[in-house]
Length: 230
Ligand code: ADE
Image (cartoon, rainbow, N blue to C red):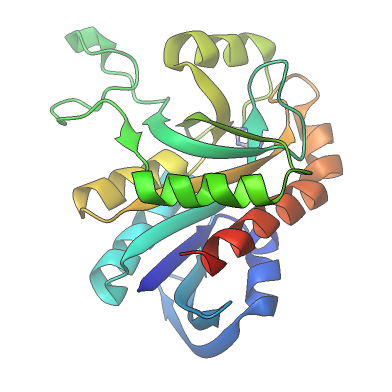
């Protein structure tokens, strides 16, 4: 079992790299692929860079060159809805690219034209393992629901409302759905685990700076518990 782990930013992956027994490092497309073991499992852990294109390239390299058996995307996200707070964890059961707009051709917002699915579904087994990890850590509030990804840092109350109404999303970020998209095309199971750093509202960038440490701590704690049970 070879697990690919992707974070968009170095600070999100740093706790994992510290815990990892590093064997090899390879640079591809400017990304450093860290091969080794983590909590007893073979992993390739990598910082993709921010946004859907970086994340897609990174996932395709994990698929084509490392032949990973599954992909886990871990990091921070904006929360959507009044009941979700910084530090809470979201398990993305479905992912959608919220900035895909071919509505001029009669497609729903988010539908990738000519693709046979609207959203990308995380692997049922990986979701169960993630849920168990959340049950084992009741001090961390957790949610299961749709994550909407796009090349946009959402910091606007009208935009959150739109994301909620259009996609029924409980969280937004900038990579998950593109990782899911590539994993789907390559038939690789995946799951997206994010912790909330802000509420994607008008004060989002300030909250983000304040809460990013707790969000990284919580997503890493859940991932550790998960990996030990894979
Ligand atoms: N990642 C963390 N917070 C975010 C937000 N508000 N929008 C997009 N990506 C994020």
